[in-house]
Amino acid sequence: MPKVGIIYNDVKPIAGRVASELKEKFTAHGWDVCITTGIGGMLGYSTPESPICHTPIEGLTPPGFDSETKFAIVLGGDGTVLAASRLVAYCGIPMLSVNTGHMGFLTETYLNQLPQAVEQLMADKYEVEERAMLTVKVFRGDSIQWEALCLNEMVLHREPLTSMCHFEIAVGRHAPVDIAADGVIISTPTGSTAYSLSAGGPVVTPGVPALQLVPICPHSLASRALVFPDTEPVNIYPVNTPRLVMVVDGNGGCYVLPDDRVNVERSQYCAKFIRLQPPEFFRVLREKLGWGLPHIAKPTSVELP
Image (cartoon, rainbow, N blue to C red):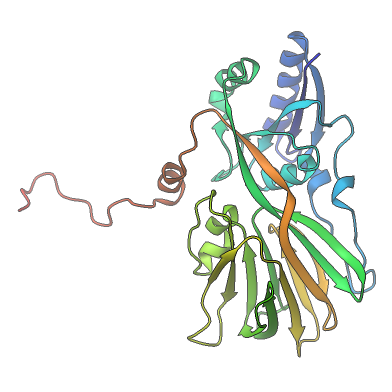
């Protein structure tokens, strides 16, 4: 009996309703269905009073989801997709992401196209695209205080008010560099169109084996985004800062103290996205972000030279 997983955003009633309808449909066709919400993939927060918030990556998989699960259907927006990617990464389950949110940059299809998408899934008419993920760890001495899988980006900054921070950052075996900025971002190619883009970083196509370091509002004309091979681990040491906050995928994170070390490296796990059509990244950039569109509309009533 084939198995399918369904992950939905329980905050949105339409996502819950569609999840129930999908469960009935797949069950009627003889499929074993496992269903869960995306909340299990939402990252927790540590606090100064409870600094350890360590859930091993292998412990995030929902009950019933395993390597026998052929694929998972994710109902929600980009936040749900990010959470789902952590839930299924350990088992390597491909995801079909269905947009019930707003922009849906990471989603593959829409609710009005779902019936045709389900038919393609059942007929095995799809491709699987792999996206690199990061493993983010916070060490205090030799002890792990916090750990997370990351599909978009890791951000390190000060709270509650934005102000300049000082970082010593070592990329691979290269000499450490000092950066003074409001914060720093370590981004995957997938995350290059998220916070990193807003902070002035470049867009990196998904197939490029690279990561990028982007300072947020740096206090130097020389501090610019750096793109480097994803085989290089990154270690970040806060310098002369009482306390920082780390946020992963815009969802959760932890406090980072002056003696802590933040380690970021490409994960052994990856996010697998089901593509109903051959992947076309530039089309998504055009449709979602307006990339490549003309800045000035040419008037149709005037003959241009």
